[in-house]
Picture 1 (spheres, helix red, strand yellow):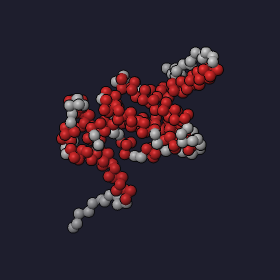
Picture 2 (tube, one colour):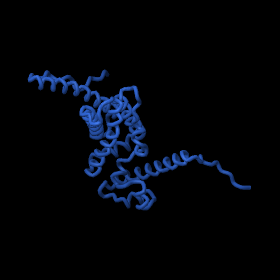
Picture 3 (cartoon, one colour):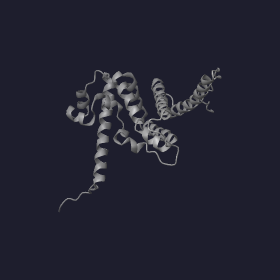
Picture 4 (tube, helix red, strand yellow):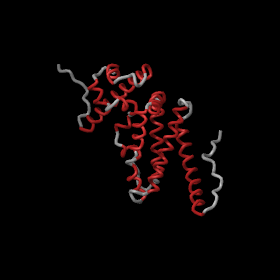
Length: 233
């Protein structure tokens, strides 16, 4: 008798999703091996050949998954999905609030999945100059595609200065939170730091508004408000 097996979905979408999940699992395995080697030998002392050998693949196969050694550190599962899909802005709701909420959800999912893995990646991202440059650029690319989408939702021009400054400030607030978290060796709650950074940005925006108005009027600005509201114990 012929041997029967349970077949996988034969639809194009099903096959595509299966390939994507297999690719993600392989990249996760390679990343964990790479981070283990970086911890044991040091980042500069670890070669692509070392990583490929540890992952039981050839260097040529390694480059099918990662363009460079830096990308092994920076990659996460969200890179496999289009950013416009991840940060989709729904009509009829505050677009900036949606963006902040979705970014926080992404932070939470990555953070709660494997904190030690995330901490190791972030520490390398700030410690190694080559990774740091790529990391900063990747964060800008995260928010960049959202500019026109949010501009359309607000009904403003694509080169609106206030929107550009707002998104740049939001990016900087997130960066400060992540940098402080890794500098404190992950002892604090990253999501709380994210919330505090956004709150600090909101308070600073009000202070800057008052300062700008005072400067235009030629008067002395009043004492700034608290940077962030104190949390109740």
